[in-house]
Length: 163
Image (cartoon, rainbow, N blue to C red; front, side, top):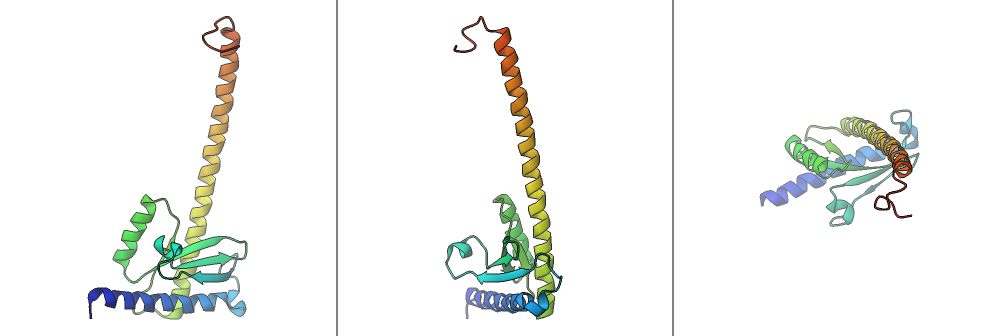
């Protein structure tokens, strides 16, 4: 048996464990208040699909419509490599490391922890965008004010503005 084939089998087994954990999370009696908003459904990426090519093994949908991508890894080293790659490509994908010793309940806890951290990252990113947008608006207003002043001062110079 080749190493790659063995690695694929381990990956498939880890993804199956995550799917069992997601089934537990999605059950109505299990939703409680573990994640707010709760997870209402999930989709497993098909092999060689666009989602799979982006490194997303599961796409989780929360009650408010937020979709979160989860990448399943079987080692911490591979998770760190993927994390660095995602940062370089500016992607927000949660990484869940499932080890051989993990139980379904421990994987449930890892998924919940991952989703909460991703939600915080999304909020930070949204706030950064709003901040940058406000600065751009402020700078644009200052620039237009500067243009109006410049136009008044240079109204006799045809080289500055076309009339």
